[in-house]
Image 1 (cartoon, rainbow, N blue to C red):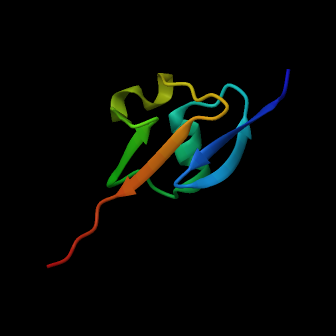
Image 2 (cartoon, rainbow, N blue to C red):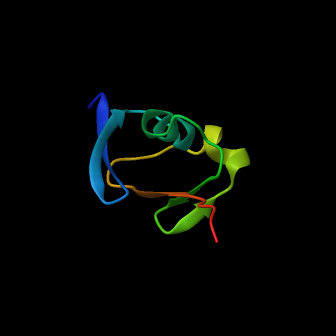
Image 3 (spheres, one colour):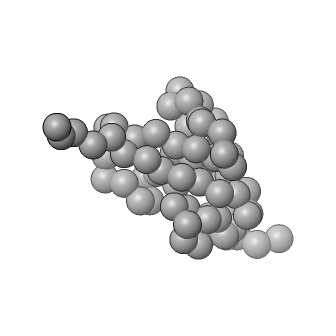
Length: 70
């Protein structure tokens, strides 16, 4: 059994430790969670479940950030 799994994050392969949650993935790639939304395999993941939602090898994660402007 491998200690790392490979995900696709925003279209790019990303290795994370086995057992990582959505919150862990976000911590690897974003300095702040403010204004971030996450989709896992095409479905939105509620912020309240990031800590308890595990990721697995081959999962596709899209991290979206809000933009301000006019």
